[in-house]
Amino acid sequence: MVINRSLFTPKNRDDYLEFGVPLYEASLNGDWETAKLILDKRLELVRFGLCRQLGTALHIAVWTDETKLTLQFVTNLVNMMTAKELELQNNFSNTAFWIASAVGNVNLATVMLEKNPSLQHIRGVNGLLPLSISASGGKHETVKYLYDSSQKMTGNHWTGEDRETVLMECVKRELFDGGSGHIAETVRAMKKSKPEIMAECLTSDFQGDLEAVSMLANSGLDIFAHNIETVNASREIYEQSLSVLKHAKLTKEHQDFYNVGAWRN
Image 1 (cartoon, rainbow, N blue to C red):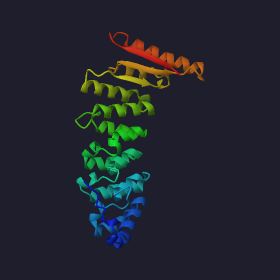
Image 2: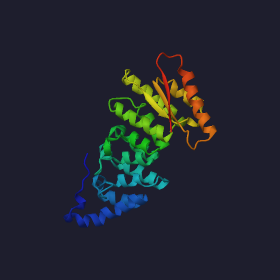
Image 3: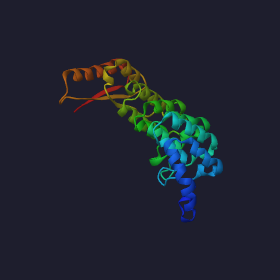
Image 4: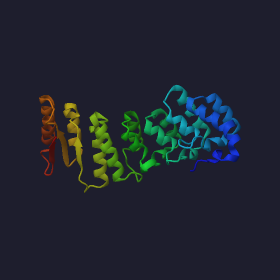
């Protein structure tokens, strides 16, 4: 669904100054009282671009910090919109839901997803799904919410590349049990989707949490890899890395095919 950009044309300059600018400012500040006065007169403005970059009033509101005011603003605005209008995409192909996912505004994202569950499947800039961009930004609570909502990344909307993106970003950001729980679920999902695929994970040391190591090692992973710091590393960190690799090997040594690897820095 395409945003109406006619407010930016010269012939609509008066309309933009009378309605567009005040609605933009109200969206930015969580001022529902002002926004409601405008939308009661011109409800169609929920579909209009108010800012060339961000998009509609909803796009603008979800981009701001999540507060009680913005949550109330977004809740009221979503109630005035149709489910289809929530799918409006800005110049970067991002829905308001995608933006909320990217910046980690989980409560604002929840309001929108409850009205239109399809929002989690609409890709934004660079073809990224909302969960992928949220993981990329290390938005822990939002990632957890979107992961559960996605039925653990199952369904036709998810490709192997999508799952790999989430996996790698969660590894880098050390989300969920140092990342192990989420990575393990991703590996299982990948193996279920394509059993012949070989899964290798280059992991952190999970801060020495051996339960987290076991969780990942028992996921169906083929290769468990971990960087060992040998330059400017304390003996304690070095021993912790060795402990992680040893535990991963012992956890999976009963399998016919399994590799534990280490690269030295």
